[in-house]
Image (cartoon, rainbow, N blue to C red; front, side, top):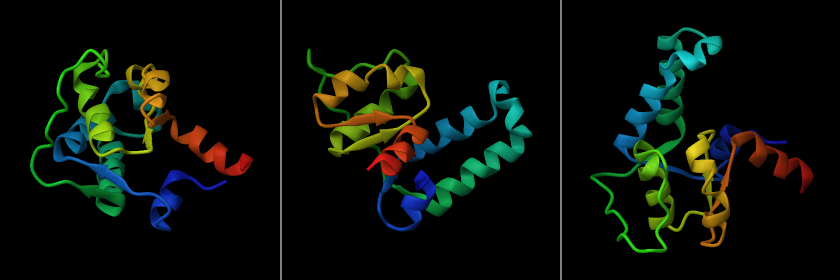
Length: 128
């Protein structure tokens, strides 16, 4: 079973993001809900290191897909950018632990995008 970071390091996957996504992830890392995972500054540093080592940051702002009745709308407006980028870039996979994004999994699947938790992606490798 390969962890997402191992797949990224081996070039088996590509992580694309924007600066706004990086800022959102860094802010989330400091939330008290993750207190059991070490000090806030340590968590923030680990997230920052992950972006530095693995993410391809896209320059500039990403064009937003047009609003249509078929557009996927995330219940959390702060997370809309993640689904928009995945669909705009025709990504095959969006890894997240966010409940609002995971709730879009069935609708996204119909558009060719799988939304999974990182551990579920790792389990697919073990099963396949």
